[in-house]
Length: 162
Image (cartoon, rainbow, N blue to C red):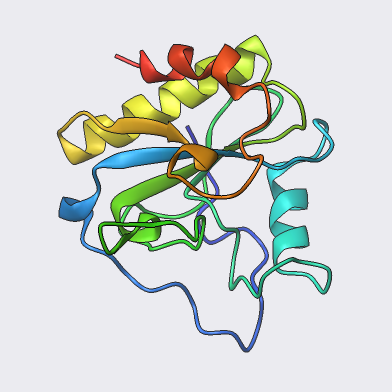
């Protein structure tokens, strides 16, 4: 895992993400960028804190991002409550209960990215000492095309991360 914590662009004058108790993390929500598969993690971070971002993110919205190389990049520690999902299930925000893991691309992840997603979920599971449920962002349920309209073709490969 490539550790990029503290090295990515942030939005100045916006409060940083809050902390969350890792004991409350029960799953991983898989996202995609819906953009160029050649973008870098730094490109995604720069966009998300820039003037054209859809939300006023203080930093990249995901704990882990998997670029085209398939090598997962750790963007935040597990105790950082990133703003990766607006879904609330049973009164609990997915930003509290789930790790946001994003692959860079717009159709389906490459074989390297699927393996990178598996490695990312496995790493989170190992760090937390328990298995995690894996869901696509739209399965929360949440009105979005994320993590891609064809996600059902590959998500089970990520779910079998053990």
